[in-house]
Length: 363
Image (cartoon, rainbow, N blue to C red; front, side, top):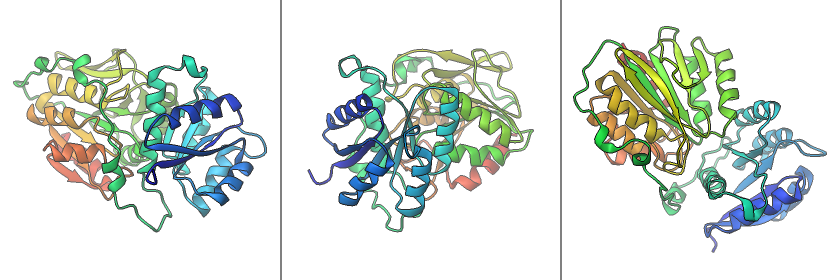
């Protein structure tokens, strides 16, 4: 098929190259056009056939992935998915790659083909599909947007597996304390950074789900905390939601908002993938609809798929004020688009205006 997503796999490990090629070729919408042991071999292959997406390791011989990524983005931008090991040093370097233009982070598979979990396959395939739809800086020719329509991501489970929909409380009493919940996926790391760095120390308490692997969320929160006027930290079980603080959902765990009296707090929970993600935006949004109602503001940012759309609708139906990021400022207009289609958003805003609305609606 001519419209398959063409992928080049770049990694110095033969096992990882074989594993990734096997996973990606198993999807009918993806074709691996080649593999390379390092950036120099990758350039040779790219001269013969340009890929739609590159999967890229960070630590490689002769030239590291970060240097290669910078050269790609300054010369011939191509969407890149970073494949990284779970080490403290590696997570910080990989997050730097997002600043240089990488669009997704995936944990490097460490098991052999017959031992790989289905969840690992889903995450790798979905990351490549999301990257293929991303708007990349310095590309003059813009996508028509049809790719998003051609590639459908079918949900695996809904938020019902974590929170039953009959638990929604539509008579939540409005109080003076507000809580803001934010969901994002592809392109969300930079969008969240732009929003949070604009917020003053007296902003309402914030809880964020950004689709990101375990341990990367901790480094992500640490980096934001160093750049923002507010406190940013990875959420822990029973953390209180406080003014002037943003809590980032830990990777590989669902994060729920709960309420005890006037106190909002966080519940960290294991469970299956919801809308093919863990943490899931829908899980956070449904819990917020249930426990915060009119006291909440819900924001859905850039990302592939439909995670968060139904939850945002439930928040709006329970009296919360809801915002979807507009198409022009999105890297991938998937999640906000799905929310807009079902009437989940009170307001559709460009990214640069959302922080102002957080303060206006969070009073």
